[in-house]
Image (cartoon, rainbow, N blue to C red):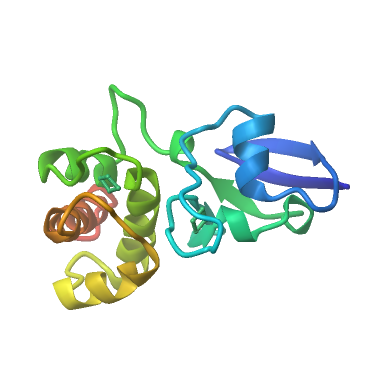
Length: 161
Ligand code: FES
Ligand code: FES
């Protein structure tokens, strides 16, 4: 089935079997392996991408349903030289160990910052992260990274200071 959508800022036309999941399409068809697959029960959030600005689990989305959508995977955020503020915050706060969950956490963090603003509370972040699992860390640094990232995102957008 065909679907035309925006992927990482560029127009994209997909032609894949109707049952193709976005997670497998990104990884296996396009080589965008920053979208991780950490479970087969839609629980871990390692596959999170932004769809129309909201965090969504790519393992639950069929490519065929994305016609007209705006999809951003982790590859569409920053570059090694110019990290997205949320990526930079994860580095600053040492918010990862093995890094497997990190793309999904960064995507979730961006959606949290967009939805709750620069001063999002720790309580809200922890609640919002219930769909993201990390097997390595105690979450403390991830929460701190999202607090920092939210402030930096909104400062960069000229919404604070
Ligand atoms: S791979 Fe999608 S939620 Fe785990
Ligand atoms: S840093 Fe290893 S799973 Fe989160």
